[in-house]
Image (cartoon, rainbow, N blue to C red; front, top):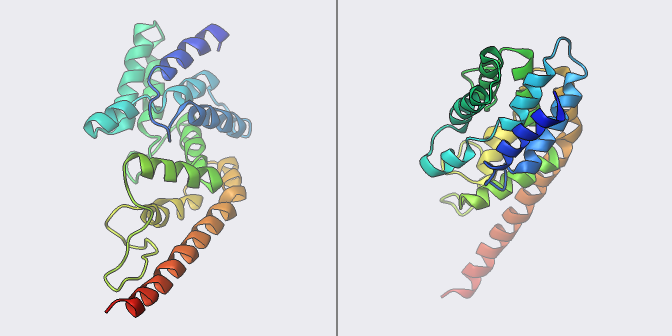
Amino acid sequence: MTKETFSLLENYMLSNMEDSAHDKEHIYRVLYTALDIAGTEKSVDMDVLICACLLHDIGRREQFATGACHACVGADKAYCFLIEHDFPENFAAHVRECILTHRYRRGNQPGTIEAKILFDADKVDVTGAVGIARTLVYKGQVAEPLYTVLPDGQVSDGTGDAPPSFFQEYKYKLEGLYDKFYTKRGAEIAGQRRQAAVDFYNGMLREVSGTCGRGNELLREVLD
């Protein structure tokens, strides 16, 4: 890929970045991690991979505005942009497929090595300390709480919760990410980061549970 082509794609990406949890620095981290993973895999189309990494979150604006799936919207936007700028149709279709399958979900799994690398690189950025920080930023952005309190006054650890919260997201998604990688290198990077996330979650749960538990006891003592 030439520097001119990279700049074209980068500038289009930058024009679509409005989400603080999925900002341009997230895009660059995903790209850098993808390049790391690609170095351990065979027959990777680096142009497709770089393009897909740069454009994988360009549908976030529409997600916030309408609730649309950012992967579906972003895949179509990327395809149209590439066709408009005279990229080959098979290249544009390959990039579209990578973006369409990068989202964390059970259906529509990535098929090509480029799609699998993008998936893994994007998920690496949800692991460890960075993943915790990004999740907290996102939860604040959409006005969701850190945790919920059960009817008995105890803080829920997030297991099985229906209402969204940071603890619910940790239990539903973050905690179980580490066996979902398609590449050996992706799993290796995530594994190196795992303990930081575990320690933060356990520490926060311990702190808020202690505060709420002791606080409820003290409040009962002073109320008539």
